[in-house]
Image (cartoon, rainbow, N blue to C red):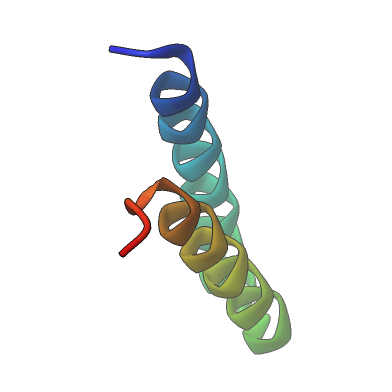
Length: 49
């Protein structure tokens, strides 16, 4: 596995932990922000078409 993919996996895992905390706190604004950052991270991994 290349280092970019490993780093992205860790980053997504970290964001998911934060998202779960935001859920527990009921912070919708934070949930949306974290979701957007996860989507950006994952889209950067997709091959260009």
